[in-house]
Amino acid sequence: MTILHNTWGIYVHVPWCHRRCSYCDFYFEIGKSDSKFAATVLAEWDARRQSFPLLSAKTLYFGGGTPSTLSSEQLSQIISPIKSGQSLHPDAEITLEANPEDLNPCYLTEIKQAGINRLSLGVQSFDLGILKWLGRKHDSKTARAAIVHALEAGFTRLSVDLIVGVPGEDWQQISEAISWLNKIGVGHVSVYVLTVEPLTPLERLIEKGQRLRPIEDAQAAAYEQAQAILKEQGYRQYEISSFAKPGQESQHNRLYWAQGSYLGLGPGAHSMLLKPDGSIYRRHTQGILSEWLKDPLAAHFTEDILDPDHALLESLAFGIRDLLRGVKVKSQLDRHKCALPKSFFRTVENLQERGWVVEQDNCLFLTPLGTLFADAVAREFLGM
Ligand code: SF4
Image 1 (cartoon, helix red, strand yellow):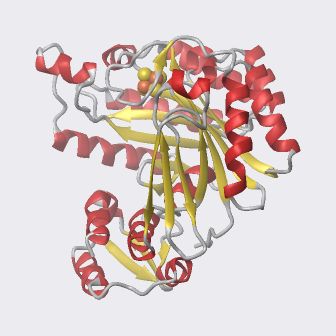
Image 2 (cartoon, protein in one colour):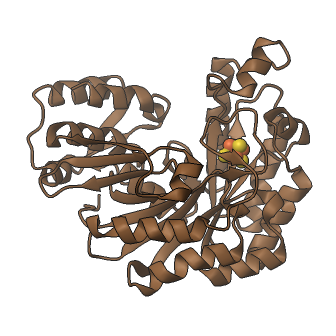
């Protein structure tokens, strides 16, 4: 596994959405993006960049909310100065999360010129009934058109998000949709199992009897079914939720799982920095848009430091989610400058006996069975 002492990324949180999807518990505001957004991101960038490594960042990720609510000019206003200040590697992966209804050929050409080289599309389903169930704005035709237009505009790195485990889903249709994605040249698919988060409109609808509550066993079966179909179509699973053709893996997400450093800009953004003593500094800017727009540095935030021993446990728990690279224990010890906890070998032995983890070339990997219990494995590492 690559040691990420100096590799780092930039995350920009774009807090606007056209409307609320019923299952969503992220921080966002309904409406159009504010004209001061780009200038405020840059002000925050100028002030906080110094704390991060001198080397240029390898990834820049616009997440949300719905980042495709930004105009191509706004994206260019943010990307250009960061690029020209040599803070972004010339081959950096620059991703925009986008909703299908925002993508027309003209916008796609413009955002490509602005520097976006990877798109992550919030498609979720190609079934109109399921899209309505989830409260999404687009329909299947719009989703397919957005994908075709993105490929025609020259986006060779394209990811499609799907949600499975929704009551009433049609597996024949999901299978055909995945086969279409493969045929048309989409290199990356993320699969999320629907979760009913507390206090969401979906939870209220379920409580009122207006939606069926998803059944856990059926959801686990749905995840396994998605794994099998994607494998059949040549997508390699490289993380619990992520499947890619070789070379199409998301570098930014891999940075998160490897506990690499990242600078989060915008209201609601998280940052993380590996310190020279092996500890980890974490910061979360609170999601209060008006406060952040007024002065991003005066906006409320919380911060904490994980000492090297605890940082090591987190690195093991997250690192093992990378199914292809696994987690190299020796590298993590060097990185965090500390020793293994006494219970480490017993914990690993126990996980191996359950068939969830294997060791190979001094790396720990999740087994196919272990991917179904990844959260339990993480809890075992964090509890050592
Ligand atoms: S578009 Fe994404 S962030 Fe916005 S409400 Fe829907 S799920 Fe949440």
